[in-house]
Image 1 (cartoon, rainbow, N blue to C red):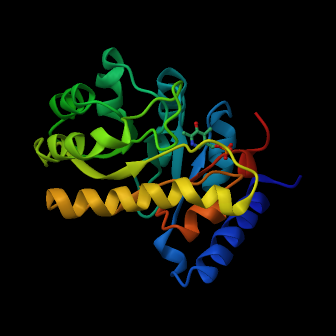
Image 2: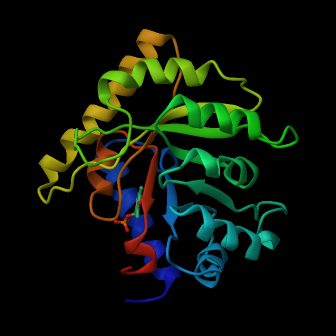
Length: 235
Ligand SMILES: *Cc1c(COP(=O)(O)O)cnc(C)c1O
């Protein structure tokens, strides 16, 4: 199975290969290491191996890790970055606005409004993505495809010194076949392009692709891939 460091290298190799196939530059894709359910020591190990951006799903669990790893936050080039990728309830927005750098899971205006109100003025703007229910699954969270453009326009109109809308995130229905994996990622990219054209926005972020389908996502334009299992092991 190897160390976290060697598995990180393997994931980076997969990303580089997919970038090559897509004729994209390697640094056009950011690797978000999804550390949910793994402890602060595992994050510290990944950080020591050069990883900077970490994704968490559960607010309470994340806050404990953020506090335990506060020493990695500041410093030249050492700055760790925290991304919330799990569902966010409106009664949990304050600690998220105070402690995170990114939230990928905004699915309604009320959440974005609260994050904007609660983002401390001394911090850089909180970076936001709208989570889109791209496979149209009844049980899945995320804004419906048909409602995404209106939500994007409303979120983009919030005070830019507090929150900055960057793009779209999705968790497509799993598919084993690489061609089938590409279809929902392509739909998310096309939706981003349509929203930019219709609303006069310049959203630049597609958060898509996980351990099992990161190549398909990179081939369709992912700018952030969220990888857990392939780095930290099975949960
Ligand atoms: C857990 C999770 C991931 C990582 O999934 P892996 O299959 O372990 O790579 C990515 N995105 C979200 C939203 C997740 O909840």
